Image (spheres, rainbow, N blue to C red):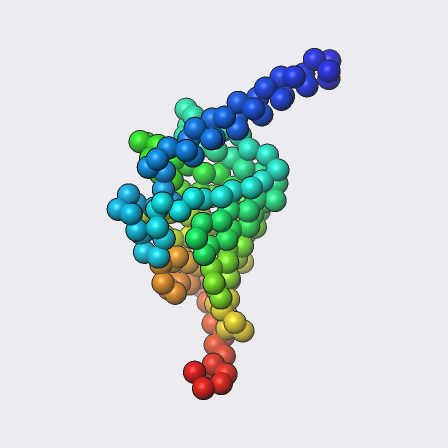
Length: 176
């Protein structure tokens, strides 16, 4: 039985890769809006995603990447065990991406992490929840939810009702 299913698995994997390639190779595919430049990101830059496995569903406009997922776009690197990408209705760009079971985002000197994260393309932000933390050098913010803006160095840190956020800031060293 296993030998009978093996060709089917290979066919499904090839089909998923073909569907993903078609979706990603559309000329208007973008990380953000369609005006050529979104904040610090040029929309003509590719998004490179690697993982151990992917599943594409054209009807639901979703692609699920699983197993050591690494996504790179410009100066932003995203690391997660699992990532679900959702296309907009016109399939011209990404509507959102959601990472599960731990997420780490690196952008220059800033690092953000949380148990779960949702990237919203139009707003160029990632909403991190569950042990959320943003670090820059030795300084850091911690809270139940952190909104990490990719355009600039802005973050909003929130806590649950009755909780508190924590911020630790170290002075810059040297003449700066």
